[in-house]
Image (cartoon, rainbow, N blue to C red; front, side, top):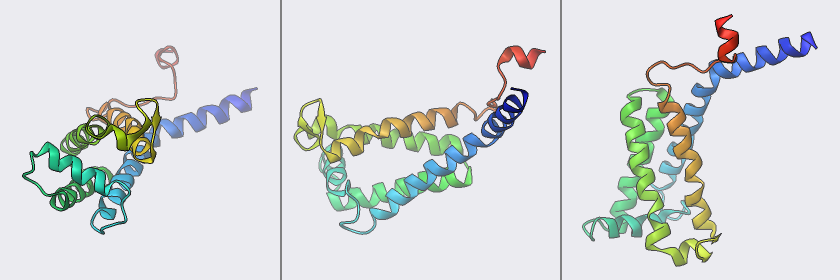
Length: 160
């Protein structure tokens, strides 16, 4: 049992030390990847829905094409910020603002997001709903910005 405890402690210590960095970088890769796709018409499955949503939210001031270009730049900035770990507070603010916009198609275009509103999402709806995980990852990363570490030991073990 002691060798199990040693292995378990070593693994959880490694995860506590490296998990946030890997989470930040992998989240950054997702945003950068999805952002870059939007620079190439037809490659992003969210392109049309995103363009139409932002056009409506801007009261028609932005065409869907310009909206998608701005979103592409925005997502790339989030991705790069997360990957390099620079200006994380501003990067996370951009992430959460972008996520607020991302959820709006569920309300603006429910017929495109659900086959049966609100319980059976389409592929586009699933694409939007998965963003709950991205928002939560941003919250976890944000929780460590003031240096709050994750630890592999419960508080009772740290005090001993």
